[in-house]
Length: 110
Length: 140
Image (tube, rainbow over all chains, first blue to last red; front, side):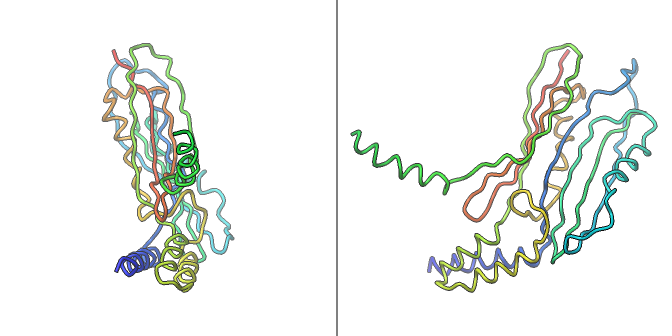
């Protein structure tokens, strides 16, 4: 009975791994909370977001600047100070292929 | 008494890896803010459950007394192609709210000495994929 239960639960977990989307989260960092310019009055803040992706098939890709593009996209959204930056690098795993993702989220102080 | 202790020690050491094995994958240290004030430490943990296909296959093989489940696990591994840190998880956004948590702990946003850690706590077939952020809130 216990063996059958163990077998069934292991196979169910394997099926979930094969059928569902799985990810590997490599790094999550929180940084840069101190504004570059200490303004005397409170400033308006809004969240900004940028994402870069790199598709890799059998270890081959032609896109090697996705992080640079994500960073440029983030900076272009904010004319003031960018603070409270959260950066995630992860991989969306797939069948003989994968997608590397960099996701940046920060607060723009105008 | 001593003999009993010596007999238990190898068993305890041998069983330790079966309980959990912690791995530190990455560390990032942020800037130190020069502002003065009292410092209040804070620590934020977020985690998700990872699954190890090969270990699941091995457990299923033992339960079934057959090597077939291990072969199935090898096929499943083809669907998990790519670089891995720890075991695969079913969500890549589980740690996206850490900055919100930092601001919740320190609403003034005067934060210094942030350390971001990426860790895993590995168990037999599953793992805890953990993101930890430690820092200090500058008060006053």
